[in-house]
Amino acid sequence: MKKIIRKVLSMTAATALMASVVLSSTACDKRQELIIYNWGEYIAEDTIAKFEEAYPQYKVVYRTFETNETMYPNLDNTYDVIIPSEYMVCRLINEERIQPIDWSLIPNVSEYMDPIFNDLQYAQDKSLSDEVLDYAIPYMYCTVGLVYDANKITLPEGTTDPEIIWDVLYNEANAGEIGMYDSMRESIGCALNYLGYSINTMDDQQLSEAQELLISQKDSLNPSYGVDNLKDKMASGELSASLAWSGDHIVMLDRIEELGNDDIDLQYVLPEGSNWSVDMMCIPTNAQNYEGAHDFINFMYDPEIALENCEYVGYSTPNTAAREMLDPEVANNVYYYPTAEIFATLEVYYSSSEIEERYTEIWNTVKASA
Image: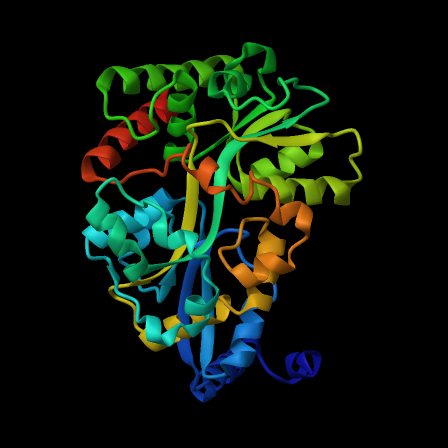
């Protein structure tokens, strides 16, 4: 058809015709727009299509970000559902950037959300922590640990000592073969945990030590910085070890199998005092489709949909029915699904204007260092 048109129409006329078809198609599309802003590689490939089939009144516009810090400056744009981590959720609640959720519109969440999320502490301020579930619904969660090729790196069996585990990322013997997230809270938190400090410290001396450690690491070990790219580098054997979210470990294992890299023995270990993190579905204050946002959140808690997303992205599901359908080897792994006792040894990232300002200053200094 296009070849025939080109034979009988000038380029200008053809362009005008195509534009009119697009405009006509747009004008005939009476669906309500629903704009979703999520992490990269963080949803099953057909979830959006299935949602639009289940809710034909909506047309989804799907956009992605790499870290909480790259997401935040874009929130002046209009989104209907965003999926930040819990510490960013707390910041957005304080800044009145997200609005309360109507739980009566999300019955799947009421039925299937793991009760443990009612009791977890999301913020240093208990009153703020108690408000989080009024504004945000858990989507996926994870822990922060070390992934490493056991054929290249040796760690004592069963160790949870952060000084021993994180030393892999600061030991010059591993120069050129380590990965670090290009994310300030994860990378600074790793350094602080290695040094024996809280990942939320505001002590100047402790923060200075972490900054110097990260600068020294950058200078002497030449780490690969990134997020999604680190999964491919670990799976290909380009890197021997990396800072990692537990969900990325599962993705890496799948990619190693796809590549047939049988010579890689990829392990994940969780240091005591490290971070656990939960990414949460929220509705921005400037959202244009409040009802559609609730429909999307409720849809994501359909057990089959939750299972498909959990299996695709590798992260831990807060959906009890989906977890029951998971491979027991995954569902019973305490690094992916920590017990209450393990949760008690971990920290979330706290958020305050002072913390954000100081940690941003440190990270900018590290990244700008020669």
